[in-house]
Amino acid sequence: MTISSSPIKITAREHVQALLDQYDNFLFDCDGVVWLGETLIPGMVEAIEYLESKGKKVVFVTNNSSKSRDEYVEKFHRLGFKSFRKQQVYPTCYAAVSNLDQLGVQPGAKVWVLGDAGIMHELKEGGYQALGGTDTRLNQAFDPDHPLLEVDPEVQAVIVGSTKDFNYMRIALTLQYLLHNNKSIPFIGANIDRTYPGPHGLILPAGGSVVSYMEYTANRTFLNVGKPSTQFLDTIVAENGFDRSRTLMVGDTLYTDIKFGNDGKLGAGAGSLLVLTGGTKPEDLAHLLHLPEDYEDPHSMTPLYVMDSFGAFVDILKG
Amino acid sequence: MTISSSPIKITAREHVQALLDQYDNFLFDCDGVVWLGETLIPGMVEAIEYLESKGKKVVFVTNNSSKSRDEYVEKFHRLGFKSFRKQQVYPTCYAAVSNLDQLGVQPGAKVWVLGDAGIMHELKEGGYQALGGTDTRLNQAFDPDHPLLEVDPEVQAVIVGSTKDFNYMRIALTLQYLLHNNKSIPFIGANIDRTYPGPHGLILPAGGSVVSYMEYTANRTFLNVGKPSTQFLDTIVAENGFDRSRTLMVGDTLYTDIKFGNDGKLGAGAGSLLVLTGGTKPEDLAHLLHLPEDYEDPHSMTPLYVMDSFGAFVDILKG
Image (cartoon, rainbow over all chains, first blue to last red; front, side, top):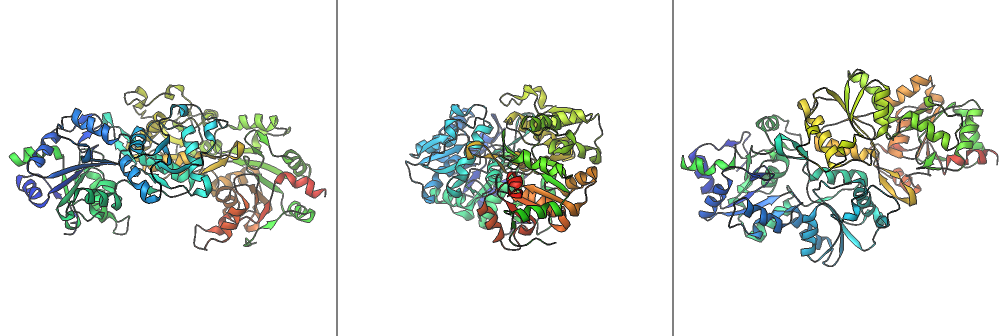
């Protein structure tokens, strides 16, 4: 199946039934799809419960690296997903730590973090020593004489991800590790997201902006372990035994979620469904459809389906 | 004159004498050339005094936007440049404010700042209302309910420059202005510098990294008013009545200072002198000379001359 130039709008019972017939496995982005911050998007608990009641496999894939899988379990339970299990969520803090091994960084090694508690927790769970990150000694104005500015030569990797708690002290220190030993320490970026939808309609800076800051100042490229990394999708597909041709990615962001589903050859070539409950508006989609063919590969960011909200799934199905 | 593939090394009396014969006007970068932070580079006061005693015109061009011209006057006097005058320094906070008029932003207008006191001072001196920047109400953890998150519709431009005092609150607010009104407010970046040389041999994140962060998260381009902007050089040349063919740029950074002199057609085509007292090391220069021709235009970043330190000028001349 190829991607049509205009996505199929899911509005009627027969569209929803077709999705149920075509797909066995559903991957969902979280923020902008399942919830907005701490607010559940109406109908999402019912939609997920319905899919699972029909034997569908459901997993959640988020580029937010701030929360560990254990913290996501709490959040899903708190928002009403009673049967939610830890194995159902893939945050990029978990993806980042999973990638260390194949970069030659073994459990026991020290890893420097610019990011939130999620990365610190997943590192510890993986048997690594986490440095930087939430260390409160770094909550201070920059001081070039600070003893922490001496690079620990045992640090073997740097992970950068979502955080609101960055300051110049943390950024300057992260730069020392990225430049150390002729820039030879692996540099993992947990996501490339520019923004995310905040409360009151605010558009807020996302983790990819912090990664981009470090990429620019260190003048080196990073390994993106988040969506749309095809390697990330390979891991999820392998761990769950999914048949790609029967798998659909549901997300609210064109250059991460939709590209993830399309580049990953889901749904026999293009298994992606865009919802409009998050950062992408109908005019963004219209703009994409009018881009020239040679501009950043617009096809890879064009969803096969579009739906106002996935929370309407059960209502549409029941008429 | 074209740029030779290997720069001429200034080591002997006849080289220094040739510079005096060829050039009437000398543009100097500050950090890494005249000083390192608060430490004067030895011999620089003598070098500048010697040039001026021979009737040479000397101006200083810095991509650091943290200090206003008045603050630079204090710093030059403090470090021993007794006859230094305000008209001799061009920091990019001044360049940013000078650019507002031709962007259609008239004195009296409100301008949002992510940056230090230098931009705030120059805005006020230019008759503008400066918002954001050093406002201490922004020294707090991010709060989506903060009244300052309501965009002031009278803001007509955004200036982003060097600062160590950024936090998520300031960055989130700056993003609101960059996205406001369909991204129509002019976005000025005070520099593109990735790093600068700090104390104890530290390499520290520079202002261009902050500009790059905002460029990435807002997904829009900015007007770079700092080096290597040819418009910035046009302004300096015009205000001082310099003959370009008799003008030399002295700096420590290839992609800003040296490109500024070369792109600006100084010295009859290539009036740039690299010093090794700052961020560029001999191996960086060697690397540049071995880049393929089609890689980021290495010629534009190749200096005509190279000198260990411009502070050696008088010693070399006197034997």
